[in-house]
Length: 167
Image 1 (cartoon, rainbow, N blue to C red):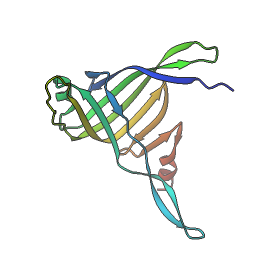
Image 2: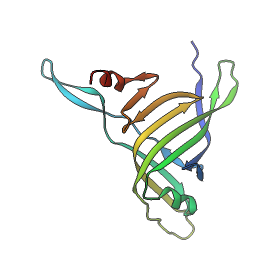
Image 3: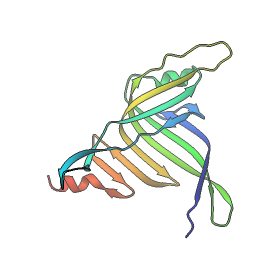
Image 4: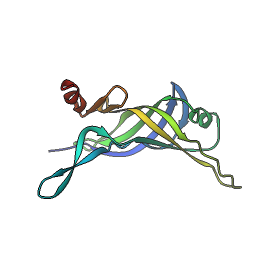
């Protein structure tokens, strides 16, 4: 059985409320970490509590101080879109680009203070609290977490809908 080999990221862009803010940045998309509960089974066993997750955080590291940084640092809810291209090796040995997108609704938690040093570039790290996160790879949705609408869908399975049906 062959699985496509996902290779390096070729380029990326960041949009805030549909306006281009940055290119070729480092981004750490949110991790989805379930809360755990303790159960008694021959002692204590900690298992994920389906439907409850820890705080989701996003980090963008941008080089330079410019209007894009100012837009990303606005102290208000932002709809962020990340687009990137990764190389993929197919079963026949050919490579082709694959488009990926992430849509994130977030509010800045911190605004960087640029460090200034002669002959060096400034590296600015913005951190956000995430309320909605959706990830597409090759046009297929892999993840949708919307905390305010109570949606937790991973790989096509909506884990929160089971909880909603019992309420």
